[in-house]
Image (cartoon, rainbow, N blue to C red; front, top):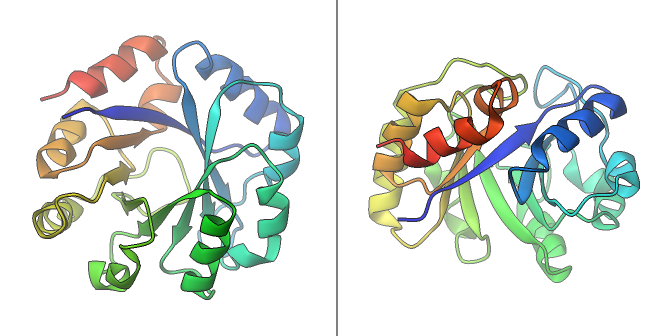
Length: 211
């Protein structure tokens, strides 16, 4: 089973965003950019699209829209280099319409479930999305406490939908990487463990090799 580790960036300023991109560039092909509006989650980040338009990098970008009304600024996002978008099942929008807009622009789409949200919320969309993204913390900040109860939910989902790629986001360290990989996850989104490591390359390898 091929495991991919994608570092996440949660930036309050353009300077922080640029610094983290430069720190990660030598070690990865893609990063996961968290965008928070202070409404859907209790934190506010950079808006992101201006920063993505201006930065010169070969990295691929996920955009995780932790926002209440993702449709409002979608046209601006679609002008950036981001090619994969993560949208919350809990946000206030026409989820089908949003997914259709992204797919019509040839973007990949992950549908996100917060820890307390049941998988039935996304089952109608599994034919159109590219992956299901399980939050294992309450989203919005680096360093949240890993919620063990989500592991069972991931395992049940994987048994029911074995061909659907699963990504997991939140509190991912070596111990928790073992748990979610055993449950069926193949994509690990890691913020704190990778970003704050004195050796980014080693931290990524540790997560890939955790078993």
